[in-house]
Image (cartoon, rainbow, N blue to C red; front, side):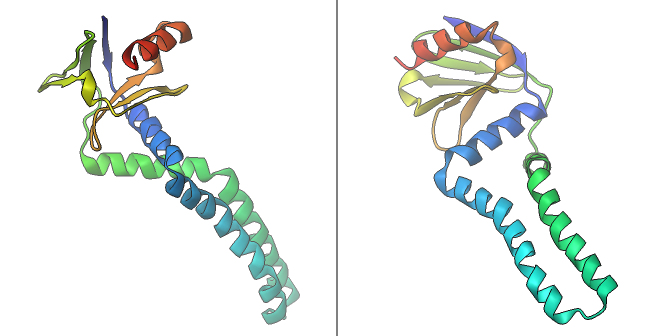
Length: 167
């Protein structure tokens, strides 16, 4: 039997969304295209700038911008993505800082918050994903339990926990 009491923070939701984006092949492909495709298009504009801009000062300015923009885009893409996740999380109206008490008793998952209590039998668990940032237990298509890494004392305890609920 495992019992965890912790506070869910905004960063926990951000890491969970990052996991979702990285685990779905279509979304991962879209993120790669967004990250490197935008930069490639900017680089491909260099010959067009050379063809249509006659003023040397304007041409060098265009070259500098068309080279620096894709470099900045690639380097800071994860920062932009994190900001996007935070904006989406705030739009959903998720509450942060509330205490969560989760008990895994071998038959069911009992999740208690300040305002609600949910019980889910182990049979409803669709998938368990153990990541460096935490353990994500997908109950159904729209519900998941987020256990941040800080609730575990060490990696061995996290590994034992994941092993016990996936049996």
